[in-house]
Amino acid sequence: MKHVVLMAVAIVIAFPFYWMISTAFKSFFEATQFPPTMFPHELHFENFATAWGDAPWAGFFRNTFLIGIAVTLGELTTSVLAAYAFARLSFKGQGAIFFILLATYMIPGEATLIPNFVLVTRYLHIVDTLQVQIIPFLASVFSIFLLRQHFRSIPNELADAAEVDGAGHLRFLWSVVLPLSVPVLVTVTLITGLGVYDAFQWPLLVTNSDAVRPVQVGMAQFRTEFGAQYHLEMAAATFVIAPVVLIFLFAQRYLIQGVARTGIRG
Image: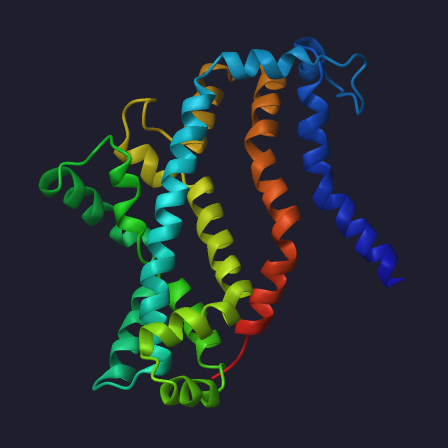
């Protein structure tokens, strides 16, 4: 019985993806007719080429990948160092500082949207650049918390052995902690990268030209300009979502392991 329920849930979840792909292969009239057809009467592969040529998608994808790589590397660096400090070091006010750090995570993003916008427009003057989409996201409370939970689970005996061998904190972090944390690091990388790929509100506010806009803002612009051509919209949505699906299929094992290893510990 449970397999029947799981199959039913899987079908419900997968149906929007099927509808998107099937509509992408339909003609304009078939995509807009009522009642809708479940299967395309004729496959129109040219929809993808048309959708790709109607917007500067190459630039959108390039901007997204550049922003994603920069944010992911920056966030990994800051999160690893901060998480190691909270997990393996002992300093005055450690608990209070970590509590304040977690408290900031509870502040909704909408509450900081206007102050951040004023900061980048009036003081930093980096609007309509790639930097404005990178700098505000070089640190993440969630990533720090996730890595800290895992770092605390590493046996103290390893740290003692490294200290006997003359290794300092940076050597221990690089040679012991990080190799044991690959699934967690992959999890943080995936969450950060997918967050950048799905970012819409902030890039929409701080960008004005297609030269620096990411793919999600480009998709919204495409929908605005070609709102009545559902077959082209679905074709564009298909190649926009394809990288996310491929990355998840290849990295899902590490994602599950990372979440399991950081779980409810300490």
